[in-house]
Every structure is written in C-alpha cells, then in structure tokens.
Length: 299
Image (cartoon, rainbow, N blue to C red; front, top):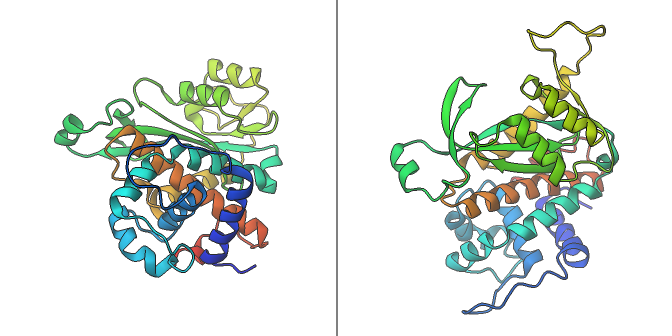
C-alpha cells in the first residue's frame, strides 16, 4: 500500500462503508437526493482538511481536480455545506472507530490537556454570533490573554490519536470539572491507566474522581505543594500533547474554523479529529516510521 492521499481515502472508505457507517440511516428530507453517502462524505471531509482547505467554497472549486478520480460525483456548495453540518455523528463515529483500531489504543497511558478554541475577536461577533451556548470569555494562561470562545479538552494516546474530546463554556466549566465530565461520559481507554496532565488539574476533587474511575493523574508538583519523595515527571510527554494540539489548530486548520453556530463548530472539530485519527490509522497500516506525520497526505 502506498503512502499517499489516494491510498488513505480508498482504505478509509472501504472500512467505513463495511464496518462503521453501513447501518446509519438519515431521515428523508425534502429536496434532491444526496449525491454522497455517509462514508463518501466523511472521506471528502477528511481530504478537505488534509489538503489545507479551510473554506468549503474554495475546497469545492478544487475538489474535482484533487479527488475527482476517486469521487466523480461531488455535490454543489449548498448541498455540501448542509450535509456536512448534519454529518457530525458520522464524523464522530468514524473518529472513535479509527482510534480503537490503532495498536496504541491498548497502551496503558493517556495524555490530557485543555486549550482555548477562539471563536471571535470583536464585540460585534460576540453580539451577533450564534455560538453563545458554548462560547464565552476565558483566560488563555499560556499566552496571558483573554479570549472569547470555547474550551477544548482532548485525551490522546502517546502517539497523538485522539481518544476522547469535548467542548465546554470556559466560565461554566473549568479544566478540572471538564476533565471529570469527559472521563465520565467518554471511554478514553480500554481500562484504568495513568493520565499525564499539567498543573491546572491539581486538586483533591478531580484526583479522587479520576481515582474512582481507576485513572491516576500524573502531573508536575505545584509551587505551593510539598516536594514529593521521588521527583519524576515525564516532561517530554507533556510536549507531545502540545504538538497534537498544534497539529489540530494549525496544520489541520482548527484555529481557522470560521464557525458561526454551535453545530458548525462541533462538526468542524469532529472533522479535524477524524482526519488526524485517519492519518495515524493509515500510517499504522503501512508501517510508517512516524505515525503522526501528515506530510504524505497534504499535497
């Protein structure tokens, strides 16, 4: 099997159509029949973000030349936008199936971190946007700046495949409450395992809640805490999840999501995570040396 976008999309479509999205039926709506089924739509959406097309309008102008030999029937802009907004369940199901198929899913180690997802930079956007259900004002401590948006919480394997993720209002749920909620509603691992995180997850409540689920939070010691007997913290693992977040935000265009509604933001997030998990899954199939590398698929 070759390391290129055509091979990834072909393998992804075959597996999704046979094992994941075969039984997903959508209610019949008015209008013309859909040109793409769910498996085809997920593959086209994955190709869009892997090729760096943040805008659906620009993507459809170049899609015929990039993947037209694989998908000769492509919808128009209005139909693609409408169907993509309804495809969040299919994208989420594909993402979770892909991460369960990689060998690192069975590793007894997870990485967790929270990062701001900006949704607007002006007061006019705040007043007119339909993102008020999920977006609010928060503090980005890494850059010492306030932002208006949502809080993204991913849990990944050591190689970068996203096992669980959630979006939350930055004021209604802080990092610790969001982490506890995510661990309760999403299966981040096949069993109890250590979770490497940062100092922001310090607290007896979140540690007890994670321990009740069988997980151990591994984090650096805060300045106001007593020094432990053994000072060992895998700082290089913390850098890995920072690199995964950078890949999602910059290389896959999540920082430039341009969403105007809560449903659109969730769909764009699922789309980027599905593309990342698909690339890692395909790199395992072809035994690529670097599993999180997207170089072979972005051109």
